Length: 359
Image (cartoon, rainbow, N blue to C red; front, side, top):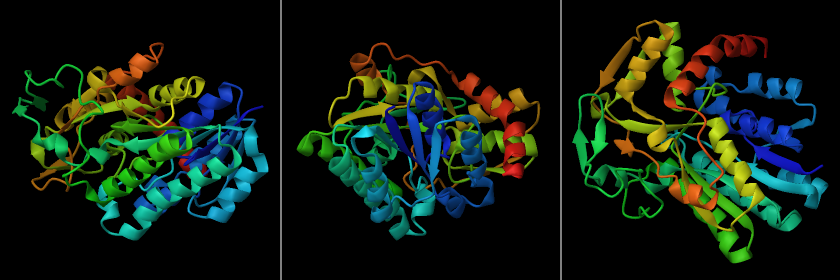
């Protein structure tokens, strides 16, 4: 059977990828060392999700390794060689707040780790599809220079702007902007992935995600806001909103819809391609709107506090234009709306908490 190697396999996107590709007949090798717990604390521990994969997927094999460990990565890739049909690279340090406290770890995980995986792929399975979960933070704070209009519950792009109808496309510049150190490390990885496609002709692709979400997220204050927001709403834990009057807008894409993008790419890879990948106009909300929806779904009032200072480099408004991907892969469609996503997170919270306690 073909093999897919998934880094960050116990995380949100990695675990969804493992399940999806397993159902498609792949043998799945997951690489994850639970570094998310180191980044964000006990609540972000992903062991519960790793154990869930090992219980439920008969052809899942777990490798506890650091993607920066080139010896471990090369050993794994050399063992399977050209039987590796796909590499899905989800492992990352994912928070721009956290990166400022330890830039070296942030950069080596996001940039050096990606380089180690690309080189192993080039050496042992050069025809495999290499899928990289990049981020819209590669554009820095350039979106904040767009002409925005303040509405009652959200900021919105001026209706005369060319990106109003569909969102921001891949032509937005990544230059002359404040990225955060996290954004810089992801830019380095993003450009590396592109270059291995253009220079070596490998089947590499960058998916520049907006907010990636779903029930399998181990949400924390610094990353995974929808999951963490609903958890706070249900548990009564206080939540903090940072800046922009709570009207900052994010598009949110369910992990399944993103992984389905991966699957379409694997069927017809295009070397060195970049796609914006988010909920687009189909699935988006402001912070205030998200709070209102969480309260409606849970039947509880969120205990939240507003802080005037926004996070450095944070976007005021982001909605992805996914039309480039839809033009290349017209059979791909969204399956989850923002309400579908939040209802799924709410329904999964109690079972996930039980799983964590038994992990």
